[in-house]
Length: 171
Length: 113
Image (cartoon, rainbow over all chains, first blue to last red; front, side):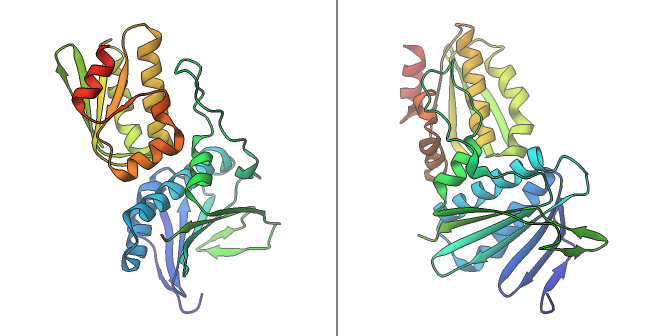
């Protein structure tokens, strides 16, 4: 990232924020505090795009659900594990790429939640993945083999094992 | 995220202000449960000042409504959502188990029936 603008972010939960080639690269700590800081940084990055409020909301819901899921279920081994979010504005879509160092997990394998019947029998699991699928135009998962996407973040050797690519329509 | 509660006759009214995301739910969930379930009163939830709703917020609303209902104490209904919040309610079909009303008066009528 030779032409990158890089900063140790002022936003809590963000290890490093860089922009390069119009893309935002956010390295998030394994902490739910990363959600609030990440939301603010992503809104800031897409500000010049003048996105419709509905698109911004979908973008934020997808970010929230994916990152929270990774922190709660994926990053269970080491507290210093990181999540990389790459945010890009494409001609017809906003793309968010999530890479993490957690256990293998393909959210597309999660079955859709059953339709609600009665309040008493309702199970609330799986709603986050459901929202990501429904609010996006495309979702793809890739397993990353060790070392294929290696980056150094300060002294941390970021070696992701999962990549989720989510596209959200601009209109 | 802030939460206020008051009573309209025999109905408890909850007003959320801010984001019902992971951080917001963490701040208000215990107080919400105490204000609703512990009171045992049918409840209306004003979402007009909620700027963001994610699955953690949906989960909180469902579990609290279920706790209220399971004790045969009361019902819960919501109203006032903006377009962004309404899209999440529609997408998750939350309104199928926690009724959504067009106004506070309608919400009160639903939980009082």
